[in-house]
Length: 245
Ligand code: 5GP
View 1 (tube, helix red, strand yellow):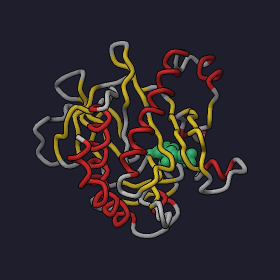
View 2 (cartoon, protein in one colour):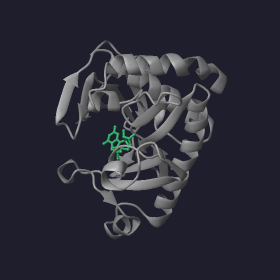
View 3 (tube, rainbow, N blue to C red):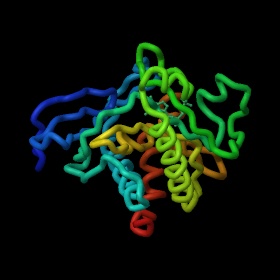
């Protein structure tokens, strides 16, 4: 790891693409974006140079944009090109999936046609469990399992739709469709914050005209050079960064 201005004091958690370190401040963690790329629950794995940097850069942009719009996120600041200081959260083991257009697991599991608009957008929950394959979970099961309260579910759903409105409008300016994305939330001092990441690894983004993908599907489905796709996306959206802030 390069010399950082915030020193990690211990490895807390090694995820598939990020490592999370404790710091001298017990309320703050250091998240390092690695160059590991995985798909199909770790079934496909590669090290792809520069991927960590590109996703960290994108995540910083989205988290900052959302904070400015009033969404509480864990993001504090960048520490290096691949690492960020974040608020320590107690993560809720749910993936909140927002969809504007049918794609991915939706068209495998249900008779939607790829590219079919979903109006209004849908919000669903997946239970985070590698051994169970992250199954979709209904709110009643979430409550019965004590994973989150009814109030927390309402807040996460409302915040997810607010994030969708903000990001959809942002991408629209550069001719990109926000197809779907995944969010994770956590608790700190009784409040709910957006945690984990928002990046090309956790979204589907298509060119409005050609439907070319600029997201992890390029890797998942072997559709070409994923670094080229991520770089092309950033080249298209980063010029809008200053205007959005
Ligand atoms: P799907 O359910 O179609 O596989 O995924 C829906 C959206 O959520 C996609 O944008 C996908 O990238 C994201 N997503 C779903 N599960 C995960 C996950 O475990 N990790 C990440 N990074 N994104 C996910």
